Length: 404
Image 1 (cartoon, rainbow, N blue to C red):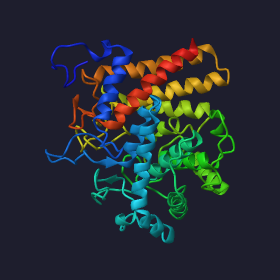
Image 2 (cartoon, rainbow, N blue to C red):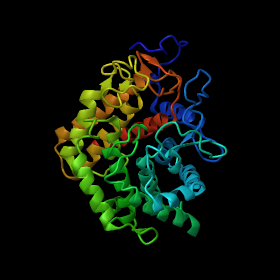
Image 3 (cartoon, rainbow, N blue to C red):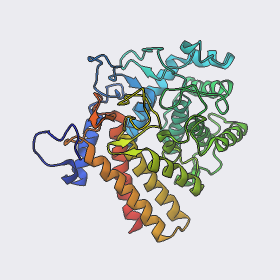
Image 4 (cartoon, one colour):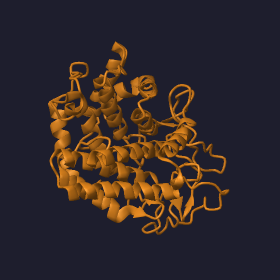
């Protein structure tokens, strides 16, 4: 497969390296993006060619970037990263309080919402030029902090920080998260997104939990009294999500972001037909030679923005995400006694997508943000893509062991 990296100096191909060396290289590139305060810049690109700079913090990217460390057992790094994200929420606590009092007008009051992107040193907001009201950020934060607390890591470690998170819940209530639009994972809209509703529902379920997630913990750590979650929240979210699926939104029949419903959130646990439909929609409609299209007609870095359908940018991270989704679906199916043929098919698809990804990374294991017309853009590597590759690699190995 021809890529912009095909003319790189001769040396061993990434696909020829050992498992351990592949993980070491990929994780090493991720660590180069890590800053002293525990955050990860999205990519080293500083905007010198006139494009939007990426050597800054996106809260979503930081949280997904921590998954590689968790899968490698490096929990001190995970805890530090989440406490940094919590520091950002503390810094803009006044915006949460303002949002509790009055639902933000997304068209005219962008400055009233918590920003998705901040400066890596000062943690100050950078721009109001695009939609910052992205509910999946709150969902991911609630989901993972609850998960870490249940594992014994005290991420939310003071009365003051508990209050910030309680106010976050009140903010979500005022924002009518289950019925009102946001800008979603790709910072476009506003529109009601199933990936955003699912993320918040997963986060709230983690804190409320009556066994939905608790089954996976060796010991019972009840965190629900710390930050109480109303059962009505869960009922409203589940109703909204069911009404949206299998679509991502009114304008998008499917979207790469929907894979988050399978991993990390697993909010569709035991709904195997629906999970398969989501994966099939992505796999059959969005997979291309150099990655996965985010959604049909995506204009961002399109080869022909005026005719985007069929010319969308291709994101390698989507191949890692598909591999993870299949590996996790295999593990779920094994628990309910699925046939050997079904389990082997899931494992084969997980392996296929990971091998596809490994064919398009740089020889030293860096993963670009995207390809346009077979060429990578300037964001090489993309931090959370490096993280998801490590997760996919380790998840596939575990799935392979489980099936043997």
